[in-house]
Length: 169
Image (cartoon, rainbow, N blue to C red; front, side):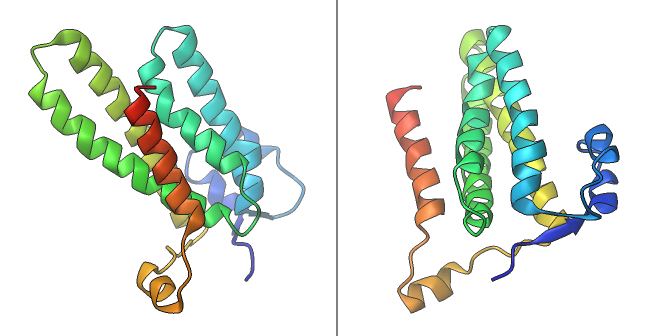
């Protein structure tokens, strides 16, 4: 299996990391792992630290999860991590969107839900951009089950998020 690549000039056109990619001259192409490590993770770290410093830890929860799981995987696991994180972010959007409507009269809870929703949307947009630009194909769950292969990376991301949710972290 080959590690997905994208042209740097195409990545510049997305608007993400335009200035940083403008000075990227190592090659005309970049692989998805390098892109995540050199551009996506530092971006998420800056946002997370900014939110933490401003007293908005609810905003940085999902960002820290994305940082953790995009930092750890090897070259071939990064695609599974991206899709696992996208699944978690989408479930967070669904859950916090509903909670924000239900708790709209409780201002602190409503604010926390809105902040979590905004961060999940930000992560989703970034991940969808990566998926499109690198033309990543989602691992086929049905085929994996038929072959008896599990998705340990995606499952681990979902489980770690559920544990964080249960612990109230």
